[in-house]
Image (cartoon, rainbow, N blue to C red):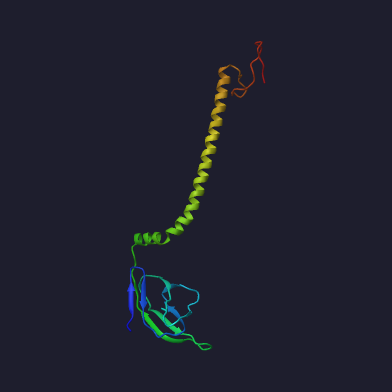
Length: 181
């Protein structure tokens, strides 16, 4: 049966009818791509009614015409080397996208990671900012309170100048004689 190739902007799926074997494995050969298998072990046990399916994530290392991508399907029989039952190759041309499109795609593909990292970090920054603002407000209130007390004492005439020119908190003598500190 002929193969069917389904594709959208980022994904392609190749479907093909192959002879059924109880245990099969698949390999992807894509030298100009970074490949990530969908599963650690590509061996599958099947019954006659199941669909054989293997998945890989592939990313081109650079744009342009690529070496062919080849998918090999093998059957595995006990104590014997795998036997190739199907091999399919495709030539692929990878188009370079403009930088703004690549950036938007990257944000679109990685938003959970970005929010997962920025979310807790953003909360921490907001918490620390809130604490710093509260501490600053409390300190300002204390300074204002002390300044009011100093002003009240000065207005009441209860302070005398010190040698350094700043007001002191010594009471003025009541008998009119000078006192120095």
